[in-house]
Each structure stands twice: as structure tokens, then as C-alpha cells.
Amino acid sequence: NTKNLKEFDAALGCKLRDCQNIEELYAAESCAEMVGEIKIPTLALHSRDDPITSRKAIPLEKLVDNPNCIVVLTRNGGHCTWWTAWTPKRWYPRPVVDFLEVVLKEKGHGVLGRRQLDEGSSMLLSQYFRDVKSDDLNQF
Image (cartoon, rainbow, N blue to C red; front, side, top):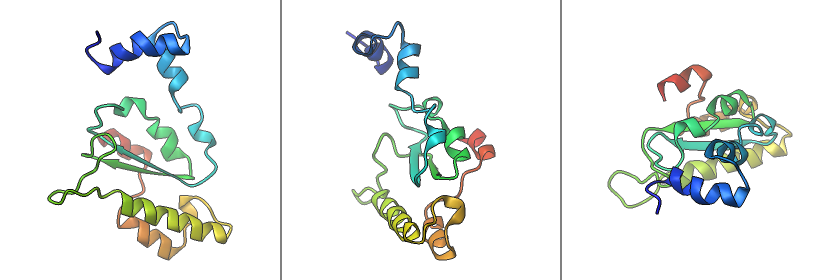
């Protein structure tokens, strides 16, 4: 019997991936080495209170440094939930759809990446997202 996710990963994940230990498993499963190679607009949404994927597991610095990535960090949201305060409804679909609409619109102009969005697109996305800089990550 395992008591937490890390023990579960050590007991089962290491065997399935043929890894010697949990550190080797997490390194093999991580996207950290590939994040810098992202060439298409990507929205990375992460919550500080995510009980499954901790802040340390996300290569935020590499995401922020990639001009094709928009990083969204929230205080609350859990793991894939982001419920509104009083209505039983998730808030993330609207900004995600708006992001995708902007990407499709900008792609038609041959322009990709957050630093090249036109003024209207930037304003649409800024109602949800603030461009995260490397210095901001210390506060998260």
C-alpha cells in the first residue's frame, strides 16, 4: 500500500518505465528539456495549490523564456478545476477559447508568438492574462 503519489510512482512508475529511482522517473517524464523547443503558440495554465503537480515540477522559467508561450499562474484552482466563486462553473474555458481564437487569427497573418500580437488581440488576452516575466516567478 502506498500513502501518497510519490510512493505510488516509486512502486509502480519506476517498474513500468524501467527506472532505477523516483528521480530518474521524474526526469524521464518531465517536459523540461523540450519546452525551449516549442515553436507554436502555447498556453500554460498552472495553479499554486495544484495537489498533483507542484511548482517545482513545472519548468516555468523555460516556459517564460520561450516567446511562443503564455504562462498563466493562479493562486487557486487545484488540479484542472478553476471553479468560479459562487456558481458551479469552471472559468478557464472562456480565456482558453479566446487564446485559441487569437492564435488562429494571428496565424492567418503569418504572425505567431506573444510578443507579436496585434493590439486588439493583446487587449483581448490581457483581460485574463498578464505577461509573466522571470522575476515574477519568485513570488509564485
